Length: 414
Image 1 (cartoon, helix red, strand yellow):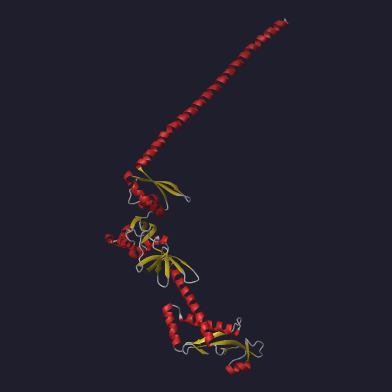
Image 2 (cartoon, one colour; image 1 turned 180 degrees about the vertical axis):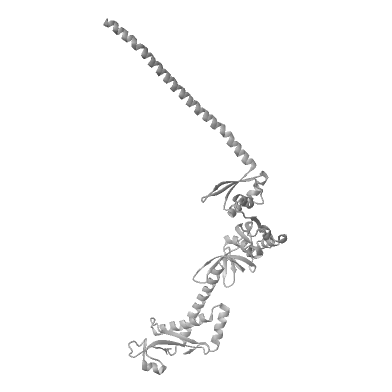
């Protein structure tokens, strides 16, 4: 047996468990595996399967043992032991039982310590990696709070507990300054397994951040009374959120706004004054599109296509509402499209009147063309009738001439 720490070993293992979050059992197993690996390498017997290490946590002693089967006649010294030799170890053994023989080499302490250090360090790293991986796989798709560490190559490094997460530039809010040391609420977007610690990707611009904030601030959403049906967001600028109440007595929009706007104001402050439009969800696509285009007023909505291949609608708004309905650089209609899933074409009343007038103006040309076609048909029909009448006239002349020929012939005969 080799003494590797005395009574302090147990305390050291418990301290590692507290600091690194790795259970003492894992550490003990790692230490024993290290001893077995060192023994096999020292004895140049890597194929041995009956070797194990046993640690006495109280005394701090560890030894390598070989497990052998008790037999009447030994055929393999590596795995078998005679009954007589086994009786010297334990008088109660019988044929077929297993006994453990200590095979710890002399002066094995230095080799064992070096091997134990290497394996233990490696196992601790693996255990930490697995802990982080499992923890953040569970957190994937949820909101968490971190502390900004630094900015590297336009990526923001955020500490979220046991590891540093990466916030790529595309997941940042445009124009926002990320100051090291500030606390930040981020969305765990993805977890990538690497050879070292897992790489956690977080986002500060994801639409689900808005959902999580509403669930935190609006009890009706967390209780399931109010349901968030859809969210469309352009981070840092504007968000549209469609809500629905499962209780007729609860106003979904009012619940999200809160008394005197307290709830929505808290969320807006968290999002750095990002504008939020709360719209009422409807199963009627016309009503849903009208709500989604708020605050613009809508005159009419015509469904152009509604099938598995396309959802298209034509929306008419007052002339003074056209720019509001479309939004700056098309933002309002773009968010409404993402929110509803409908392709929305917006026109003003005057634009529709011009389009209708142009359509009416084109119709007489079609009528003239039709009349021209009718005139051609009439002329053709007239020519056919004249030809038929002429043919009938010729046949009548022929019939009148035949009797004259008969008279002449008769006279000749006379």
